[in-house]
Length: 79
Image 1 (cartoon, rainbow, N blue to C red):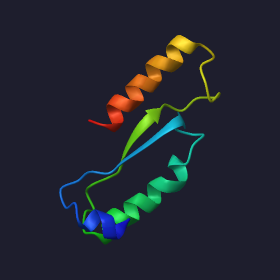
Image 2 (image 1 turned 90 degrees about the vertical axis):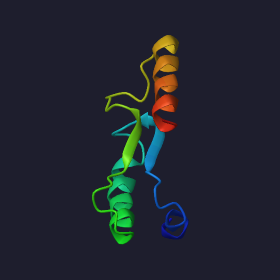
Image 3 (image 1 turned 180 degrees about the horizontal axis):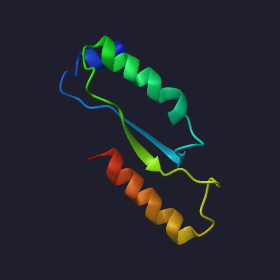
């Protein structure tokens, strides 16, 4: 990651996942992304999160709300 991000000095880092914030890899990856940013001298540039909020279940159980949250996730990831 460090080698790739060196090429993109003005890029921001966003982690996107479909799982809820507390069920996917975010809690494992987030401190490592911070270390990468610090290694590159970007200490104030915290990684952003694009995904579902913390939830007790991995899905809402309703296809309409699942689709809406997925659309929001994609908007957040690519803004």
